[in-house]
Image (tube, one colour):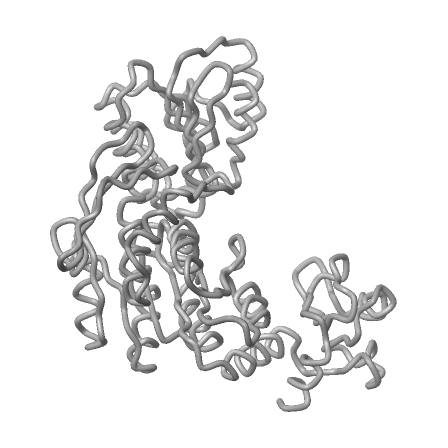
Length: 424
């Protein structure tokens, strides 16, 4: 591995996409169902890559294009070896919902005092995590690694690469049930993070109001820092929603004024508390953290609010599963507005539970008197007035003049509900 680390050090970053190369980078060829990166190794060199790694000998020359048995395994092993060069806190964050928002909030808080490497976007899988780790350099004091999963042992795999010594599970919910089969499968996989923190003699950050996470943490006998509304070292209180979240918090002899955020959704309340508890662990002053959270503006279609010419629109359509949908709707019900409309897209990857989970959403909407529009094939089976896809939705919205509404856009990424924003 020393040879490969030397090659890494001689390069300006790492890329697995021959179309997006920095000059003098290391290009690592990966293979997928519909592509073979080996075929682009010479093209990568010609485009400015200093070295390339392939796992097909046909494309290797052993001068600047080197052969390895498996490109993906090499990427992961190189990332792990590089990560282990740095004796710094590495925080692993996973969960069924809220992990990306929490990661961004933690990053915002920690950057008030430290140089932080943080997962960009949602690069949280078996390729994204190693690519993030390979960006570590001597300036970084802390690393935040988001970890996603859609089947058993995914988190274990990512932990073996990242070797985190701090861990946070935001929550356990019904997500990616096609891969996990049931809730117990989700819990077991997400808890793999706790197992690795225990092995690494690290610290867990735990929502003390969540009995499932609290019990899972106690089993590992790790150092624990907790937060919650009813329980925990750090206590928070939701002040009000307008629709932005306003809250206050206390820790030991400190009590904050109301913190005014630029994020919507009661479900983000615990994400704020998690970020604050992690900031306290690193000794950041409360005032710095409050300012950081108050200044954070969400992006990427997560908990955003957009004031259009006609309506106030909550854009939360990056992803959706039963747990996140329930949280979004609970929060929407509590928001005060005379005209509320929920435009909801299908929740994908639910397997055999798909229809029943969508029916629960419809039942909730009807029981709470929320006006709604549904989009997607699954909802269409249950609600004949719904639209099959976002194109049909957009066509219908052009014919309607919806004004003075508070509108929630919530659905899975594959539905692309944000396309309807132009007509709202």
